[in-house]
Length: 243
Image 1 (spheres, helix red, strand yellow):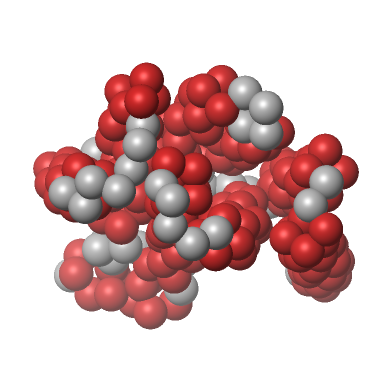
Image 2 (cartoon, rainbow, N blue to C red):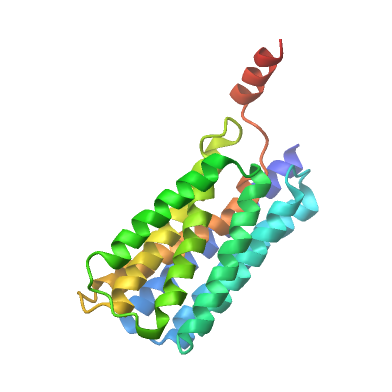
């Protein structure tokens, strides 16, 4: 028990150090630019952050969702690749991001099986997304229109599943953690949409970066925090319900 506690403290310190390093790279990229330095390092660091939590669970913990960590790591890797290739190859980067969202959706589905509620929430989000994309008529997508719509559909289902999982009675704190990370990811992409395809203020590019890396930090650390034990209150409620 004492040894496990020590390892948990060590993991917490490593998580904090890596999180600060990622935020530092984010800040440097916002201020100085140079994407193939700061953006590249920041993206690699959030994959390393996820890998650290992955290895801790793999080596030391009796996990409850074995497939979850593999799917989350795959999502982080594709997000990293998409982040890097987006610099010069926007369509390829968007495709890689979309694949990453599919892996995230699959990971969230390991935590809670797919329900009609997931689909309803996701479709509502997609409908809102379509209103934002189509109604203001401030975007100039050109040949990218189909890519944007398909990507919006995929990320709305990723976020919709994360939101839906928060209604589950078990592991609610961990699901909220994931939902916040997914929401920040969604909002970051929305800011990117304004920055790339409209002529509005360039502040949206900054907002995109301000939200993106914290989102990846939350998702990377969720690999550990979604394998913790049930809260005592949840166990007691389950026991009472079975009587």
